[in-house]
Image (tube, rainbow, N blue to C red; front, side):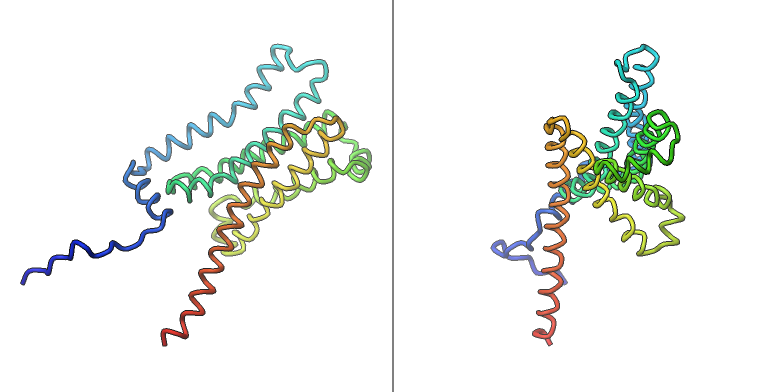
Amino acid sequence: MSATPARSGAPAPAVSPAAARARQGARAAPVTPRRIVIMKLVVFVAALYPLGRLVFFGLSNRLGANPIEFITRSTGLWTLVFLCITLAVTPLRRLTGRTELVRLRRMLGLYAFFYGLLHFTTYFWFDQWFDVHAIYKDVLKRPFITVGFGAFVLLIPLAATSFQAAVRKLGRRWQTLHRAIYAIAILAILHFWWMKAGKHDLELPKIYATIVTVLLGFRLVWAVIARRKVALAKAAGPLKR
């Protein structure tokens, strides 16, 4: 028995733009384990560039008149850069359908912590020489130090629970914990903004504040849309009965 041919004028089922992009991305290039390994290797090596640059500048005596300030600011800026890149993974995945990008998020987040640790270590060691009392007074006295310290403290549990064993152990709580990256990004922007405000140089802080606002804005819009869909589905449920 042959199947009845479909009518030529029948409307095609509606496909959302996000689903269409996901299908196009899936057809564009199959994601193989080898490709993922290459992607991770490229990102791993590229993310070491800021550290290599500092080492090269140090060996070639190019850190300027105040090497401690140069290292502190460089590591702080790269911490913010990697926070932004980490936050960009989810929007890029949803907009392009490239699900393999998620495989890079943990590494990028750990690099944000790594450069944050270098930033804090430079301040704690070379700037303050392990003077805990002086650091305590500095944290209370200068707001940009306070929010920067808060951002670094929040990064520690995220880095400590970034591994698969922690994901399994924490379950749903893991996702809730790692949403702290939103607060960390905001605190990092405040840290950068207030530090630069003292010198009336807000060009870079404004750029990064805009980037973080856009990246968090995507999430807010998607969250509102998802909640509306759930609410509409619940409202439509009783009508179908």
